[in-house]
Length: 358
Length: 169
Image (cartoon, rainbow over all chains, first blue to last red; front, side, top):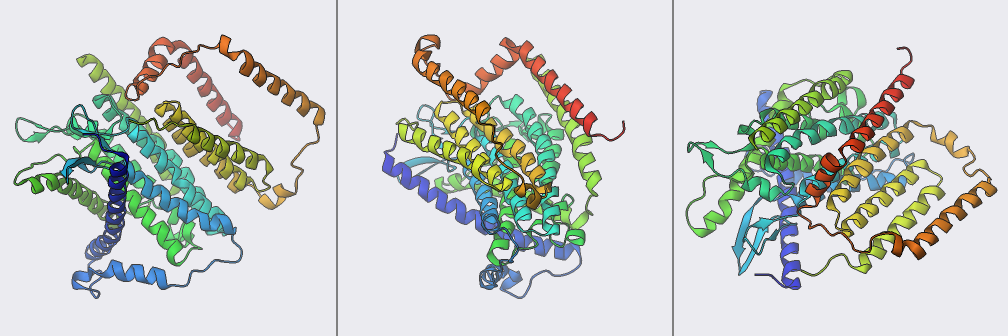
């Protein structure tokens, strides 16, 4: 049933509000999880004071960010200094709009997929999204580097500038491995539409091995993607742009209060976005057992999807608590001399297998 | 479905593209110019979307706005800007500029007037969901030879750049 323009806009606005609220809350609680898990890895308790298990700590952090003095150093390039955190946050929040987190739901006589840019295909009744969705997400995340680069340049401080230079070189280098690692999946599925990619991964072999892309020979691609994603989001062991032992805080050295918080939220939102992409492309998206009454059937896929995200967040934090930082030449060598050829070999082999089967 | 590609969006994107292109050449700070150039490239991506070419639009964002311009900015950040801003920015070469502008203008007017008979009238409109496949088939089947030659040329250029940048081989 096609809906009229008013309902369409209303549904879109509701979806946007929910997505932004959920994403920001998820970012806040990823920070809580990180402090808790890293604390336990290092034999400490992590936050315990605010609320049970420190669960209200993100709220206290947010309050602190708002109440702290918002310093603008006199030597900065003012326009770009203010623009940079906004750019970083905008790009981080925009890319989530293209990510489907569940199948079509039916509520109040309206059917809509759980995705901001998705619509229902009126012929099949299934979710449909723009066929170029994956590339647009890559494009928006590659624009995210401007926030970091401009922040470092406009701060007019050598630590910030060095951090920004490292960030742009690193992100441009690892974008190649990241993009190439997705090509194998694209060859297998033959579409850029994230909905269609998830639909192809439903079902199991022999009743227990799920038909996820990671079990279809894309396991190397998955690890290439994971490592490149770590580098793209500037996480340990690739956190050279903000290496605190040498660069104070890297590109956001001169930022304080809410402007700093915007970079912080952007980093965590980016982590969640790449985790969403990893689960859609390699781990079957929201596929999982669905049972029970209608309301449970509608919500269970979203739950399975969220479970994968939590798993990825845990891996991020686990790696952070375990590994030391790369040296800069090791970082570049790893990206160009190891991940890049491996990704190319993966494409070649996948293409050969697909061509041989056809 | 109502068409989204209305005249309003065409003029909206075109005005952004033209205005920021003018900003590129008039601003003193190279960083401001680079930012304006990024805006131009992004609005061009929007115009490609209006021509129902989503793949070209996405590649425009990924490659030009997200890749090449980052490297531009990277180089600009390394330049001593105080020194660069003191230098003469417009070379007063009126004769050459006039000839170039007049030639380009004449070419554009000629295309506008006579183009209808030279270029095909019908717009080849591929459905959105097969657009990428059509581009892939064209590149890798129909025009495979030119495509490979172009990539060889690019490879030679890269090798040349590395050799020139390296101090001692």
